[in-house]
Image 1 (tube, rainbow, N blue to C red):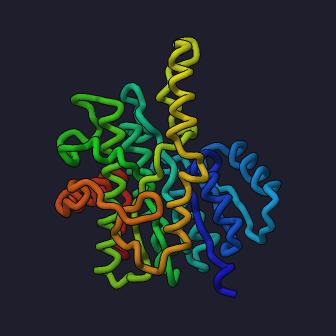
Image 2: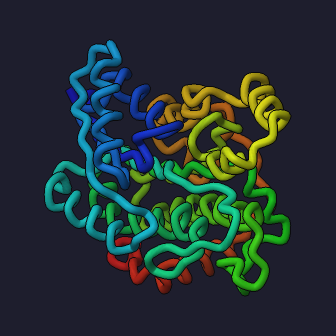
Image 3: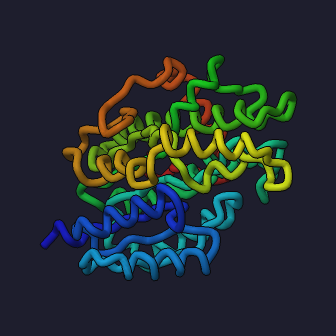
Length: 306
């Protein structure tokens, strides 16, 4: 039956929220194949083994494809090989989940982009553009962009003059920019799909919640610098305020399979409910500028379709 033949690609699927998202989608038995798009083959294979031992009976195939979002070439190669191998069947769901957070000093991707905007936004821009022909073939395609309430850090809006924080780098400032970019991108993609007559493709963004996962690896200082009280404080916060990865994945799963077709188009969600994002997310000029600039920087656009 059609329901059990759905396909999904999840970036950063070997750990944290991405892993929990794959686990929940697999257990739903609505998917015939889920692709774990990850940088590290051995970690991805361990994740697939762990899911296979999970106990939930499932006919869903789990496959690994290499993707390094810090490289535009890798995103292009991923999309091209996916279209070659699977493109005829279309793609029903793309969860742009992978990310880096609060990188202490300015680091760069292979292409020279600042790491957080590069991985969190530009890598996913290139990937989504590359996979668009497959998404367009699905009757009900969903592009789910994992953002964060940290998009509100970018209080002055998109830093068009200093997108990579080169003039004044701040770990959280750049994270905020990258998360604002995620929402602007999702909303612009939603508008363009509708205009292009691709009402079958729905793009949305979400806040997963403060989650206890590897994403926070930059938040705790290296072991040798940790003071006893920092460990205690972090543990207290983790146990009392942070969500489990399953709770963090819940909104991604909700948008992938529990919400009606098209309902989430151009909207932002938190805790499985629509939420109003910061005003900056609704800036159509910024969204358009980011769309064009991203195509320019990556050399990857949606030209043929949108």
